[in-house]
Image (cartoon, rainbow, N blue to C red; front, side, top):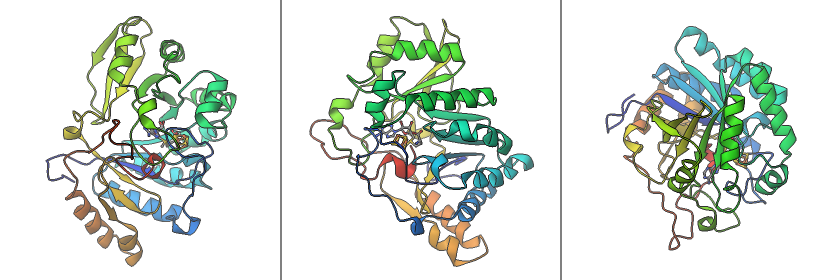
Length: 329
Ligand code: SAM
Ligand code: SF4
């Protein structure tokens, strides 16, 4: 699949639920209204859509949410998608999770063919973790991370950089990830969805984070070929990789290789745009995948050149109305 700007689409991210067992302050309001369960694609339907994308050339699938591991029977989907790894049609089946259920599922994920997981963790301090997630249990996530490591999964920690919230512990996080053998990626807050607060207060440009880290660590840029917005460095002192995702700069759109599917079967061609395609109707129209494949091709032909994110004091509204938990980041 090649879009109008010559980009090959080889990566699908799938949000399998909009629900979550946490309420991170930058991601959700405390009182969220979730989709009625009947609106969700079934696990069989999610498998069908993902498999159609694989047939059309997608080489990497990432399961995300909401919190993907709170969806009932989710391991069934991982196991069925794992068959594409065995045939060689798929290079990677990955997961982004908040880690609360990892202790329970790490072994099953490995059995399904998952090799790496991204775990979101913004702080090493239990009290702070509770504040950021509104009620999360830090020890539970740390146990989950340990279980994933013990099961042989490669781990990448995603940390959202929040002004005056966690910006005094980034050195500690670099050191901890270095010791544990985890990659660490810092993320800038993105203006998505209403969140009971003002995002300009949270926003911390990663240029500043990187400059502060450079006072303590030697961060050497390394090439990155994921086609994503992360820019990677190697920390000479720890040997670990430290990445920076700066969604508000445009410099990654030209190499964007991904599209995003929601749990209701809506395909977003860009994280930062409202335009979307309905795949649920063609999916349910026929047993054959022909209408679905046609709808996917039509959607890819509309993939926009880049996003329209803006965070500043004149734009108090989110530039994209849906929450990150709808498309999974
Ligand atoms: N629940 C899982 C988790 O937390 O990893 C998967 C879904 S979560 C929406 C995916 C990633 O998006 C997390 O790393 C989270 O920190 C990030 N995220 C959520 N809202 C964000 C926002 N407004 N700006 C930047 N990153 C955000
Ligand atoms: Fe849940 Fe992940 Fe959003 Fe936090 S970032 S509220 S864990 S979906």
